Length: 347
Image (cartoon, rainbow, N blue to C red; front, top):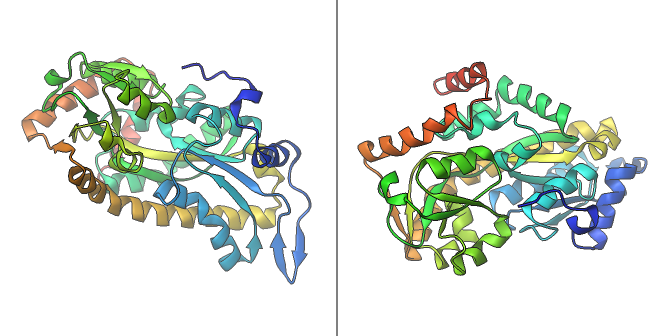
């Protein structure tokens, strides 16, 4: 999929988009005070891929409330969920140009701009929720955020989980081991790691925008995908999928960013409380996300999906195939960085 689209086609023409363009390119107007309250006159425009109510949406939408109630700061967020301002990739482009102020997506989707976070997309590098929590609060995360910001014109915001571990789902047959995958077509993101992982398991990857995936499954353009339970449920994947396997390969982290010009235009009196509000909102979103992973697996089962849990021997086969791409698609990830992440497994 070609992500190099024009500015004009990046987003639907809406007043909200124009507001985002103004705030990103021109900066916010002066801070004003009314009855001691700090207030921004321009709205912050967020184009998100998550649906209203899910933890990734919550981690952005709660920020104005926290700012108002805890820090006496009034900021209006105009939030557009479900990729309503464009595809996943066009929203990632749009936040860099200033068409929108904020967006979020899994770390793998950002790898086309800079690969500082590829280490976290290596299959089986993150072992569980506790480790993931340590990673995003670590010096490693801060170091990689600075590296990313030096290459891409965005401010990295506190991350939130994106539904835990992905399920490998399809509408053809059960997949107890990688041997059963052979020949199936799977939607993937554009990340080389994601593409090579599907290949390592024996599948045929097809990079595709999330918004196009449901229709592609209906029309048999693809037969499955590697996606978290909450996303499969909220976007009604159970209507076009039948089987899923808990391969436990990728723990999805939602990478949240703000246009750098927007960030720099904020007065210091707004920047500090806003970052603290993002941290608090992300913590709330992560807590909800962690509780929801098992809940949504059960909801998918109620909708008729069969979710298979591999035995230890079967999971070892999935892991062996998955880790094989560390030496191919992951060959440019510094070994020292991998060791830093591994050290967080038992920190």
